[in-house]
Length: 319
Image 1 (cartoon, helix red, strand yellow):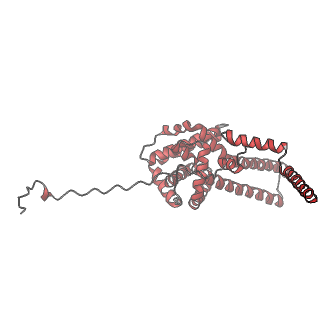
Image 2 (cartoon, rainbow, N blue to C red):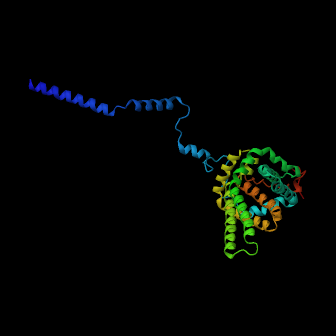
Image 3 (cartoon, rainbow, N blue to C red):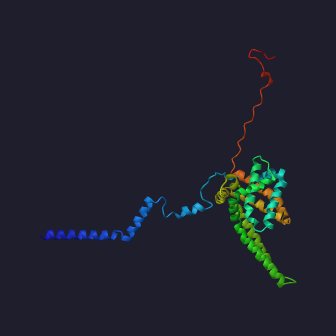
């Protein structure tokens, strides 16, 4: 009798212990609600609510792994681009110089004309790519870039953002100069001159940094807009990826362009008009080295047979 009671007590303790452990691991009402919500979203929603953050960031990153259209790696040769660029524009050099003169005159003299800078750049690269394919460029070709007004404006806007800070710094320097003329009408103290030189050197350094950064990101953006008919953002992303795989050559070409542009600015800024056709043609050549297919060599034509084989019958002897 005592043994049966002891067995019943052990069984009741075991069942009570299992109920307690089940209560410990049973989800609460709040947890059950969350599990049901996630299950419904996973089974019935065409897209999960909680999209991975990495996927969201990479879809907008300029270095996202998409590579369409394809491009070549390590293909840019700076001095070759400069030489071939001159060969491309030398027979119509003054026409391209007139293009650049019109662009700079409109942007510098007419307020808010900078909004069409992207369309002008698209027009220049359209003309250069057409000439590269054997076409003849006329003066009206520069206006064809306005058909790419929207993507060209986006590329120009993004690439011009760093230079807004440079323009603000230049305006502050100009106001400072005016204040110094009023404060020191006769002679400026040496320490103030040192401060002015330091500030001006900082502006020049900042310009060089902005020039290199924007040049690396947007090196092929305008060309991709007009040649591949891409949007401004898609062209910028593809340009940045192509530059990353051709960094050495693009960096070398940028340094050459910076040196030539600095030389042109030193010639009372008019030299910049003379330099731009060469630099833009060099970037068109660099684009062709990276994105355009390599022309396949045509097989050489076989020379005609010797005259002795003309009109000879099979049984005729050749003396």
